[in-house]
Length: 369
Ligand SMILES: *Cc1c(COP(=O)(O)O)cnc(C)c1O
Image (cartoon, rainbow, N blue to C red; front, side, top):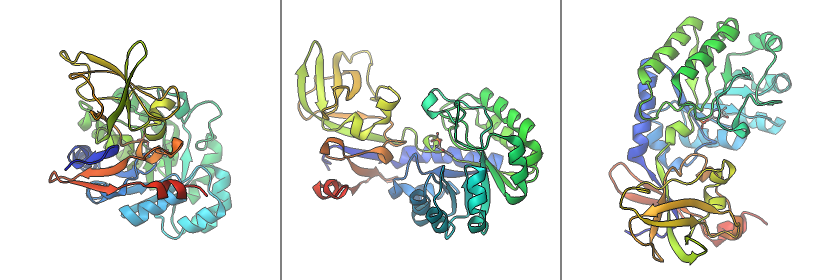
């Protein structure tokens, strides 16, 4: 079956590999994992993910509701700034409600207290290659920074949330961070039931020392008598999806340029935000000596996926597949330029491909009014 491009293709077999690692950490460390929906909320693969993960966490009322309706198990609700309407709504279904500040906790505690109430802590340490994504950046609004103020809230809290990493694949750094958190907040951790260590830990990466990682988590849980949650987003779905495109034009301006039927700005915007090139599997190998800049078809001049070497000359209709199109990608796609939005397809564990969602002119029109 030939599927019309452009489309995102999620591969459940690749997803399963990450999920099995998550399950291993769960078994070895006793740490639960909830999926961070802001990274990935393509719910057509939740039936598979649900078997290996404990629930979802969220950044807003709508994400929390999606987690509750489509994933089930535990629903953690977090938001940087809840409105009263948000809190009234999430209180109907969330198992845990995590506040970002003491003022939000004060304002909404009475509505939230039937759930388990948590508070986000900003430990002042972080790991991130990008200031834009650094929760401990100067003037950060993410989490409570004042330890004395935090200590006064403990009687109202069932847990604390620390999210301070972004794509941290360095186990030694993680150990130092956790020791710092234990040293600094240990007294408070002993008085709560759970602690979430957030996302941004790249423990599904090839070669990550999983057993040591699990032991470190288990030791931490034992020392402070807390249940540990991880909130993997990117590490749960990394490497699991492609953006499949076709060449619609070939032009030349000092170099060969292939224009595809998708757009970085519209369909993989994080590449522009973080100034990273797209990845193509099989690119740059020995006998791949046809070099092209591959660009999107939006009118943005810098809508460029990157420069790659291909085995064969590209032609109109040649297929180009960009790797790593799951995390922070499908959730961010947009209708800029009114370009055809990529469909959502899944390769199931048994190999069959299902096209789950196609987007039409009506979707474009109804996106605004
Ligand atoms: C973004 C976020 C996550 C997920 O982060 P990843 O880097 O995708 O693992 C988890 N928890 C919170 C609170 C977040 O803001």
